[in-house]
Image (cartoon, rainbow, N blue to C red; front, side, top):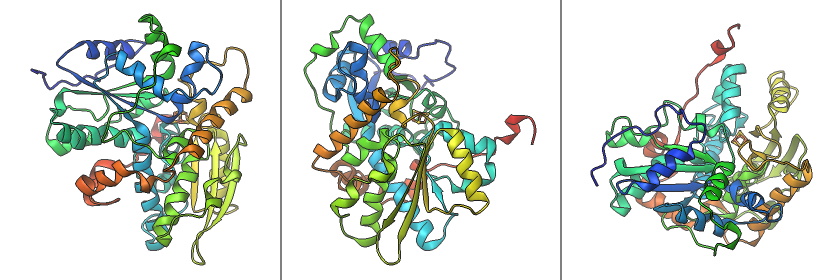
Amino acid sequence: GQCANVCPAGSITERYEYERVRKAAANPDRIVIFSTSPSVRAALGEEFGMADGSFVQGKMVALLRKLGADYVLDTNFAADMTIMEEAGELVERLTKGTAPLPQFTSCCPAWVKYVETYYPEMRDNVSSAKSPIGMQGPTIKTYFAKKMGIDPKCIVNVALTPCTAKKFEIRREEMNAAGRYLGIEGMRDMDYCITTRELAKWAREEGIDFAGLADEDYDDLMGEGSGAGVIFGNSGGVMEAAVRTAYHMVTGEEAPPLLYELQSVRGLDGVKEAFVYINDDVILKLAVVYGTANAGRLLEKIKNGEKQYHFVEVMTCPGGCIGGGGQPKDTEWKGDTLIKARIQSLYERDRQMKIRCSHQNEELIRLYEEFYGRPLSHLAEQMLHTFYVDRSADLGVK
Ligand code: SF4
């Protein structure tokens, strides 16, 4: 194709970003690649009259192809990559003291911005690992493009998410790692971000009978996700996923079955704690919170020494991304019942999967072998990690 090196992100003037994605999908010179976040598949069905929490992964993939996707990949793949990098970083903080403890998760952009604005002095506690979407984007435009023989400049990367804050995250200045690596100026790692609701609206406009679609599978190379990747959507899920892999990194053995269902970090309590015995040297003290009010109170306790942890997961939305701002609206005021049905859907899926740990994801193992080398390698640091800035000036007062 004769596709020019343009920056398709630019400024977003349309209220619905999917209009731009639709245009790209209609352009034969563009290779449109969707990556789907964990939570969308447990909620999209609600928009089409299906039962709450219906697990509609196969129909969602089929829908995206019908709408013009050239490839459909899974952000769960990158969730597994995030765990490799983030658990690797945690083990380094624990064993080499490379950065302060506790380590905070970094996959929620609203939380990251909250720390940058209100607690900039604690931004070194936030994992430098990019979010799954932040890792998926540059990996598609380098590794995937090369393997598939695609000109990265022709790729339009679209993240399908439950989240409205991701629209801000993909436009952070530093999210252009693939362009820096390949020497292509102006190329963004992820070009667009559309929500579950936007996708449903688009599908309705096209008159697609979603519930009647036959299941389809993801494309290869970056379409495999483990059970650990799928539970990322639930509050506590990132923590459980990290524990499964940190255990393996520390001991060289697989975590015992007991550690695959950490009940204490599941459910809708705003603040959850767990203590996980890995070996005599490593007993992890963990906390999981959602909502910035809960997070703020916990940060104060950590700062004044009242609470001590190694690792803290923070999500902004109720119940985690599963309750994200881009998910179907709770028009019937079902509240927790609806969120719980979606949460259950993801845990159920994890339980049914053969591969439940990020480090066992075979396509991911191959990616490390052929491209990144190992977690926290020089190239991985360059592409998959980031830094945070002090945004307290945005408050106007200090
Ligand atoms: Fe987005 Fe909410 Fe998930 Fe944060 S918790 S990443 S704001 S959906």
